[in-house]
Length: 353
Ligand code: SF4
Ligand code: SF4
Ligand code: SF4
View 1 (cartoon, rainbow, N blue to C red):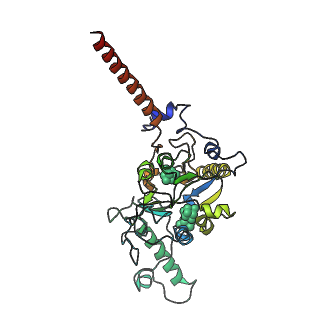
View 2 (view 1 turned 45 degrees about the horizontal axis):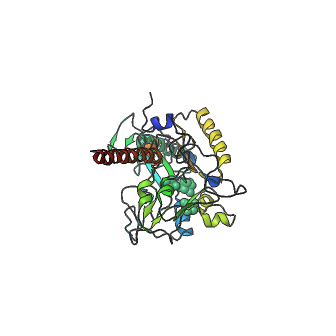
View 3 (view 1 turned 135 degrees about the vertical axis):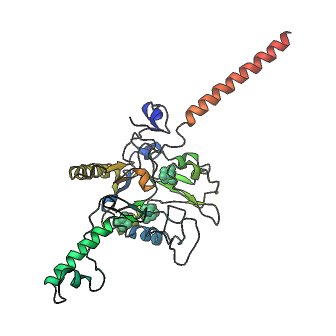
């Protein structure tokens, strides 16, 4: 049985609730004419991400974002000292974040390496001559042994064990440009708006720093800049899109882990990629944010993951935070009518007496 916090709402979506459920044309819903551009998005295939962070750097460069850590503290080195993940999380100055997740799982690490000086000669009886001779063979054997020992190391416990192996998952996270965007729904100034491309953009010159959108985002993406309280997040490079260019991060990605394009085409591509991985035996592969029946009506930026969403720091069952607003206003309206009725009855009753 699947237990889901979103299940009751998802099982019985209110067809009249325009803040929830599938939405075939987000731009038309936002008021654009019929001839608006097609909805664009990102398909991030984490199975081919190598963690190079070119996407992070390209985003920082294009948008002239300052360097800081996940707490907004500027640091000359910018190193966390705990992981290769020195960004930590998405923030007002980090609109892309490449997560490095180290896991105790099976992995093949046939990397060449070296043992202690002299080990090869003494242990394997080889002599240091030219590559391709016995010494090279012994060295290669030692490399395999070292790789096996490394793969048995459990970084979470610091112990080695035959059943403990490690793997790295890498994933470049970003704003999801939700079909139903809680940030957009609650913004009182109109600073957040839906573009003609179906993306969600914040205009810093209109943002008044109220921070409502920060609490309304089910993914914890949008963030306030410490200096002045205004919010910032990925714009899906709106400025580049209007000039016919693709986003800077997708352009910089060397492995095509970040794929940009028309959302419907990306969805087809993702379905095919998932089928390929499943056929190759990668049973844990799954798409995240691809389903228009999920709690946000599907994402404009969706992912192929190799493990549970929680492993990547993503909510397993995101729900647009404004989903229940219509029902709440309905209930509040009923309560107000009832109270007025009671008050009128009381006044009329007292007059009769
Ligand atoms: S992920 Fe958050 S910030 Fe991005 S569009 Fe959705 S609600 Fe808004
Ligand atoms: S689309 Fe543009 S703003 Fe968004 S993460 Fe990529 S480079 Fe940054
Ligand atoms: S998404 Fe692409 S650019 Fe970003 S870290 Fe992964 S491989 Fe590098």
